[in-house]
Image (cartoon, rainbow, N blue to C red):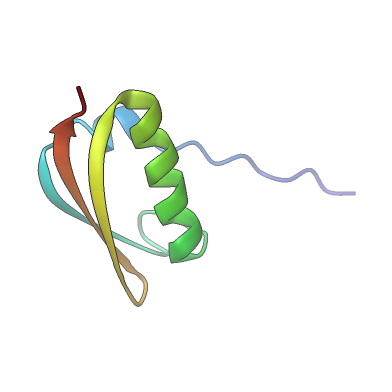
Length: 69
């Protein structure tokens, strides 16, 4: 049985920038957009960042609203 590859994303780098960022399936990530959106939400919660995420086809538009208090 083949071992599943673990993908590590640069969450601290991606979530350090405030404002809008776009991420495209096949270029920035490999899973389904809805799965990646949930991974963004999980990472943001761990890092104390507030996000808004919009999915359009293969593209995620992530709006970083800054630190939560």
